[in-house]
Amino acid sequence: MTLQELYQSIGGDYEQATRVLRMDKLIDKHIRKFTKNGVVEALLAAGNTMDPTALFETAHAVKGVCANLGLTALSDTASEITEEFRPGHSRTLSDADISAKLRKLEEQYHRVAEGIRRYENLG
Image (cartoon, rainbow, N blue to C red; front, side, top):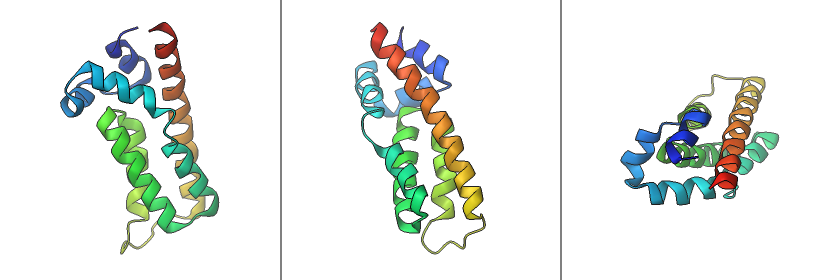
């Protein structure tokens, strides 16, 4: 499986990853690290406590990592959570709404992680 095939299978934006990371060697290196870096798990854990600071910081981290890797669906969902908890921003969503967004992000993450595992096993 090539990187382009991986991105197609997980709904990622290979061109975005290429614009940011510039070469397949770096994309490969960072996509392989993605499931091991714990950033998504930290966001999901922050959702268990609904700590606004932790939710902002971890969602912001997920948004950035995913945007750089061209994982746009994950980045977009994390961005929604980031903006909800941005300091100085008045909340507009309920905790239940945030929990629903976190469940959506978790489902997206599992699909991406499974694709990455298949990529690693074939490469």
